[in-house]
Image (tube, rainbow, N blue to C red; front, side, top):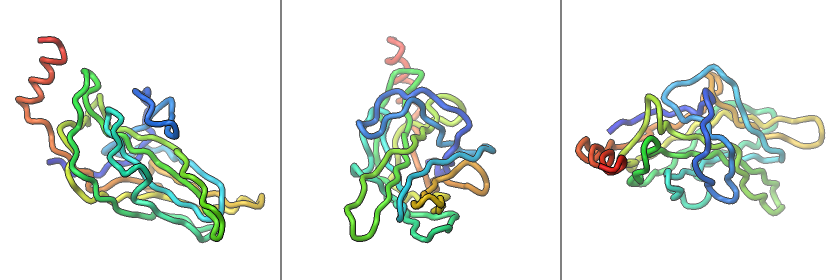
Length: 203
């Protein structure tokens, strides 16, 4: 049962295999990997109080989260920056098999929104999507284990000087060390993996 730390990573982009939902479209996915790269990348959203959270999907488009962001953090002090964290209880979920060479993977999307006390809240906005490897050195298979994820976000509430504030989410270096800890999964037993492979190639 691997228990991992997965880093929000921008080492490479991979084609999006399907459209997640009407509000979560992207041409490319970035990686959710076991190591960091040396890039500094970020997303931002304008407003007064910023919030950041995640939604999680299986490779067949089934959402694991309840239809709205979880592990949400809030930034409301102008000029404040740094790491924030929140937890989410990931349920046990079987990972759906798929055709080789893209058998199984997990998608984690960053969502952000702003709100102003006393006014109607703005809707969540999709900002970026990350995928575990479905090719390469660190693919996952089998099932997600029931585990409490701790999600770390590097955020910054910036005063732009133009009459509004800007909430940043950054990742991908030792300083902007955004990540998910206690990412836990159980591999497919070897006999089951072999059977799936033989069925996938028509044997």
